[in-house]
Amino acid sequence: MSVDLETVKRVARLARIAVTTEDAERMTGELNAILGFVEQLDEVDVSGVDPMTSVIPMVMRKRQDAVTDGNKAADIVANAPAAEENFFLVPKVIE
Image (cartoon, rainbow, N blue to C red; front, side, top):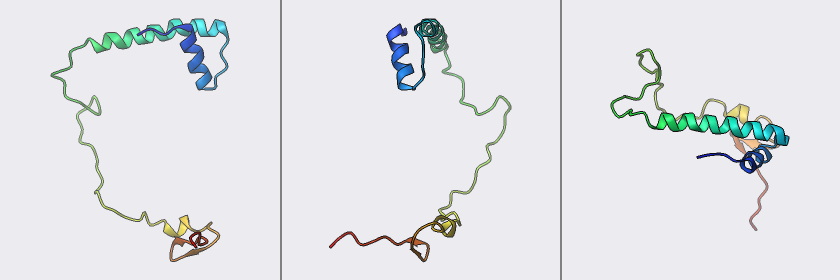
């Protein structure tokens, strides 16, 4: 995959980044070099490599998977105009 000048300008516009034509031309070359490197990585055979989270063998710390209310219900409704028993009170909209 290669990137052309129009693609760089379009991405810059979508990202709301002001890019001059000279900068866009420079970025085109840089982005094509990056994509070329990624394509080289795609050629590497990693079929026998296990996924890892670190280069040092370690066990991931895990928390207990339990459902809680976060113990913050009172903090959440503290700024509400009206609340009752940690629930937001809203005007009735169905007649």
